[in-house]
Image 1 (cartoon, rainbow, N blue to C red):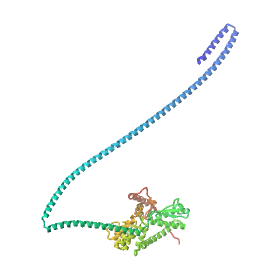
Image 2: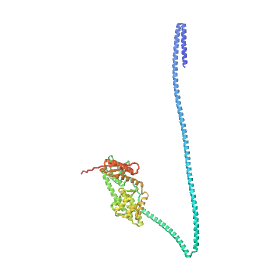
Image 3: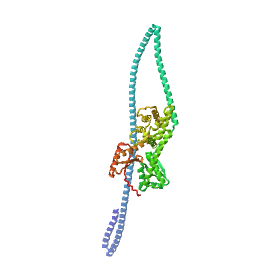
Image 4: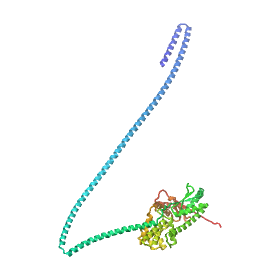
Amino acid sequence: MIKTILVPIAIATISILLGLIIGYYFRKNIWEKKAQNAKKNADNILAEAKSQVAATQAEISFQKQAAETLKQSALNIKKEKILEAQEQIQTYRQKVEDELNVKRDLVARDTNRLKQQEDTFEHKNSLLTEKEAELTEKENHFRKQELELKKNIKVVTDLVDQTKEKLYEVAQLSKDQAQKLVLTQLSDELVKERAEMIKDSNEEIRVKADHYARKIIIDAIQSSSADTVAETTVSVVNLPNEEMKGRIIGREGRNIRSFEALTGVDLIIDDTPKVVTLSGFDAVRREIAKRAMERLVKDGRIHPARIEEMVDKARKEVNDDIYEAGESALMELGIHRMNPELVKILGRLKYRTSYGQNVLGHSIEVAKLAGAMAAELGLNEKLAVRAGLLHDIGKAIDHDIEGSHVEIGVELTRKYHESDVVVNAIAAHHGDVPKLSFIAELVVAADTISSARPGARSESLENYIRRLTELEQIAKRYDGVDQAYAIQAGREVRVMVKPDKISDDRITVLAHDIRKQVEKELDYPGNIKITVIREKRVVAVAR
């Protein structure tokens, strides 16, 4: 392209030179004129050449841009092709890996199957070895039996020969001698028959005795049937309105804290409309708390001093109810003349459970069963009823006194001058001491019947209550502790201390000691919070 542009330029230059030469030889004017024309032509040619050069440069620039565009497009296409190739490679690689994984799984499955078959073959081989050893042992045993059988055949043969010899001797005996020999043999046979008759007679007597005993027990159960009662660990108090919940809680929760500290019961206030829940494993505490809360709700004036007053009144009422419960049990069973203190202790069983079974109801049921069976057998019915009623009396105070409920019951009945038959029945109803009377046997049978009937007991509740009781007992061991209450289903123990014996600094150490002792002695799920409360009150009365 540049060559094409330079050619016209060269031609123009030559033409100018030729024009100058020719004009030199001709006229000067003509030469000048032609020179001017040639100059004009040259200028035109130069202008045309410059325009062509500019066009050429524009075209070159355009071609360069086109080349750059093509180059960029080529690079993009190259990158796309490379990416496509990489994707194809990755896809192919993934496909190959999937196939390899499938093949590996197949190989692993085949390997496991072969291993299982190998284990099965080894197991069968061991079984065959055991069978072979067993067969060898049986073969040896059969050989021994065969030898013993041959020996026994020889012995029998010898006995037959001896019997024949004796028969020959008998044949030569006199009449008296033969008669004596026959009577001796008959006597031996009669002794055997008599022994069989005695055995059959004893068996018949035992069957009749079992039948009669079952009949007595069934009659006793039917005559003293009891309801199945499920014990709970919560009580519900109804409220007149939702506003009452705020008054129960009090300013910054002081009322609810005071109530829980005085009663040892957990007060639960949730979203349930017009209801508060009292939770505690001790039925006496829960009953006191329920009555106190009902009085507070009815009165409407709720503050710490009023709460303490209502709790004291409720406690006195519950103590009166305990004595009435003991008297009601005596009247129901027809028992007279029992020491008032023993009656009061008996009434406490109304608020005591054993494996979820109310102990007072259980004791009344045992008394009725023992009395019914004693009446059928012609024994002292009143004494049996008394022993059955008092057999678990120790459970009323076993939380306060060391020892088992059997030991405590024996000490109580001796202290209040119960008969020796009743004391022995209490001591022997768990097999700790020998039974000295048939009434003790009847109390054990009645206790078993009452405890084993369907729905009578629930072991989980008893274990739960025992764990909470142990928590409280651990806290009460320390000096200066006034009261200890396990609340929040055993997740918290609140310990009230005497302010004149334990200082503020000492309560931190006390909480730490109780925590260590609980961790050492008890097994429990989750965490247990130990809260030690030290409160000092000063009261002045203006008159």
